[in-house]
Image 1 (tube, one colour):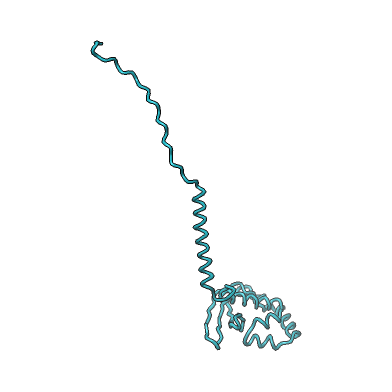
Image 2: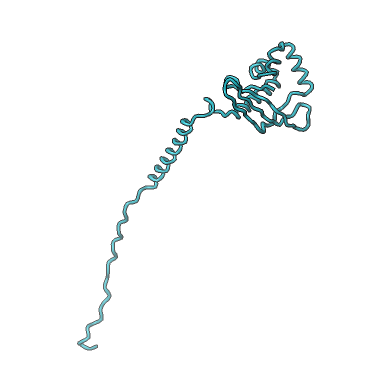
Length: 173
């Protein structure tokens, strides 16, 4: 090496840089609270809409649901021999029949129907057709059901005629 040549450079020590501070992030709980708030507002909106919209009745049940209940109540009263329920849940010819029969005659007729297996067991209510009417006419409905009598092996379609009297569906035939 010549004297005019500078000595080789020695390696220099460069200290590591301090890591940059990351900005503080929000905790995940804030996101959950926000999500729950959105869900609560959405549910509240649905409930408010349902309440403001109202329904076909004050109880909220649809006419179809109330017709199904009327048919179920009627067939249960038939099966149980409940003459009072049959009198209050029928209209037209059936109301005339149950209103005009004595308790003793009904008990004998019911016993004979049970013995012969002629009381139907409704398996399903398949279709309901409602015919609306303006007062003083009566709103009516016809329901087709699948039913089986006590001694029948195969179910068969049957129909129920109903009428809406004083906001209550009643079985007429």
